[in-house]
Length: 140
Ligand code: CMP
Image (cartoon, rainbow, N blue to C red; front, side):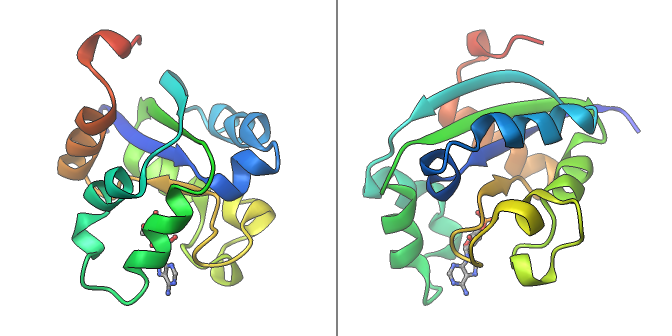
């Protein structure tokens, strides 16, 4: 597998509880390198654009409200098979179904307040990275 980049968000429930460093330690222990990172506070409209693919889902409004409720940390993670590796480290979307040792098992509060987001495919990774970062901000 080649070296890939994936997009990651440390969500409001985690930044609020001061878990940025603990979550980053999990990424780094798994061999993922943080090649870009910044702390930002989204507006609800900006969150809505990011999650537009979920616009028809019943939880969309709640999701956008939550993502704009507190600062988030947006990141680009790089490594061998980074997209799948990150999804493994995050664990299942619903923390009740996440494996032991995963970020969501350890830190997530619920399916909505689930501490992290990670891209699900190379195309979405490229789109999501481009929404938040310029090329100059990616320092491998
Ligand atoms: P994420 O990986 O960021 O992608 C979409 C998000 O929608 C997901 O994580 C969850 O946080 C959220 N989500 C998915 N299902 C539900 C649900 N049933 N109720 C609330 N939020 C949800």
